[in-house]
Image 1 (cartoon, rainbow, N blue to C red):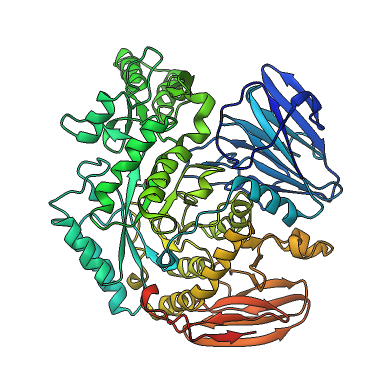
Image 2 (cartoon, protein in one colour):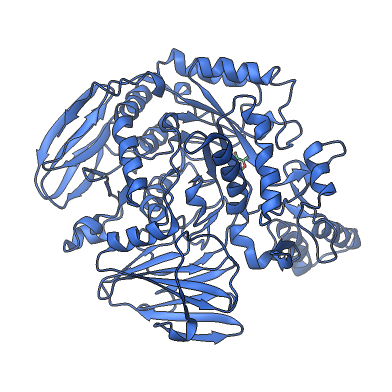
Length: 634
Ligand code: GLC
């Protein structure tokens, strides 16, 4: 059962599709108070209680013992001391002595102190007094998730081919570079379905343009790639370049579509293209306008996009940069003491994503001027909604691949997410794993991390182990940053190992796609913490390195370097399966802890007793998979 408590006049985020009668906040059952215009509420936890939720967030599956903040942040260092990542997924669930779920529907900052200040207390601070809180009752975690999910609406289902393997890099700047990637994969006989176009495909980083020099006759080229079974997926950034005669910018100015400063002038910030205007995605007319621009690319045959920099990321504002330059000029030639020097340095470092800039931007919501601070967490979600609404209208559901970096609950209905700029660190394999069930709880099913890691150089073994987890994630994309080592599978020695891993993915696609569609249809999770299935098993309850997948399996990636396997805990008797290319090795194992040997070209998997999963033959493209003739393993 869901109860909704309303305080003040909340901004409608459209997170929920189900309507509930509002109870007054004075009836809210948890201890609460208003402090400095913030609503603070709390609940006690017993030692063994678990706290789940917060979707894409740092740290563990069990969120206890840290303070998190819902504040969509462009932060490429996903270390455990961070509080926020790119998303704001305000769902939390207490599981144990008491079990209930909460959703705080509020588009500005929310602070979640989950046993950080006081070990057995969760204190939630909403940065305002206009909000809705939903309380979801249920005795089992999965019931709570399903109830919540049915109220927020069904999760986005991408096209089937979006389950194929995807290769990205910042950047493949031109057609020659893209062809080289496809050729590399073809020659190594490694399956591939998508190649990404990062910012350099555009003309001077202008959204909805394609650089003719780099991609002459773009539509013909897209068609040619489609005939080879390859989808090209261009990036779209939130900011629109300020440039004379650039149609999108000029239309934005003429129609007053951009976010404003307090004085009504257009807010100007610097991102990849230099100065940009930020479309006011909170307005329906602006969404319709921006959404219809995707047509420029869909008309050229493009059927997949990734929306980026939509927290929004702002490298600097014109105002901020000018002030910093003035400050630096005034200090020129002076003998700076330590504090003056660091102050100057911090002035420049603090230019990006600065709170001062965010609080100087204005949106129009229901005809009223609203400071960006108040709606920060739904900006990116509304950018994605702009695209989603257009795609649905033009193509119907499930035809266009769409995923975003920033998100809020509700965006799960029209897109997936990727987990942003991670690192080529071993610890990020596990971080990837931990985000999966949390994201699923919040409705985001089509998700995944940059496999191999985005920032810094990856080693061959890291990419292989990362991919062996990615075999199971709906979005399976290898992506890496500008200046890093080549990370395409065929660029490493003995590419046969990569082929072995990727063929396993293709063999599993019918099963994974089916599991995905069922989860979307039934408001279910694809990935669950072990405790959901084995609530009375202490080791399972505490397990953060394995996940249940669908009704049939348990996954357990190897996540350390220079090891030949890992320890795995079986909460019941299961079949251990090692998949590699077309090889399948099975072994019955009993409940308990085992050390499993897993080579770099193998994907480990456990199948529950009495369950079986289908495998098809591998193929070079999803379109070539024979989905009828399946072999079952158990
Ligand atoms: C951002 C994105 C990353 C992309 C880069 C250049 O950092 O998160 O994926 O490669 O921008 O567009």
